[in-house]
Length: 189
Image 1 (cartoon, rainbow, N blue to C red):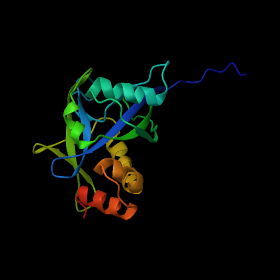
Image 2: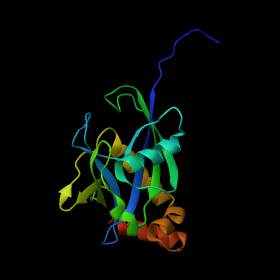
Image 3: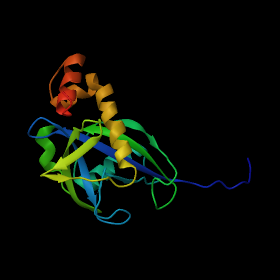
Image 4: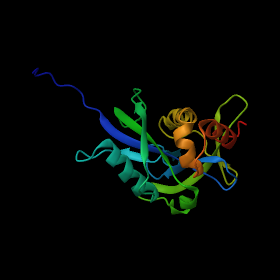
């Protein structure tokens, strides 16, 4: 074993939580950051992992602490490690995707270091760029690299429509039906 010291990154877990809004569009649960960096900006719920937890346990804990939402199955989305993604230093995040049944949306409440928790309806403009709106308000650019994480999550939702569609819409459906329903709910169809 070498005596060389290697720099050590911090590890975080983020949870992109999709649900359906009252109009049947797909929405995402965001928190408004209460502290710097990015105080006041909207972000995907998440935070630093504790040494005694797995990344998935950290993701579940952070989701409960920041939004009050518990007991959601999660699918690992991927690792986000671009240098400079977090101004606090070298931070690597493992992002997850979860589906919240529409009848549980009222459980979402901002907590811990989150000023607020709110669902933003997802739309896609004519160029395919993601737009996020809630109560006539646009989310604006998300904190950290969360716009990138959200875009990859939407792509996963579309690519895994046969698995995630029935969870999102709360009923059995064929893969083709799920794909059409997701495209329509994303304001594409």
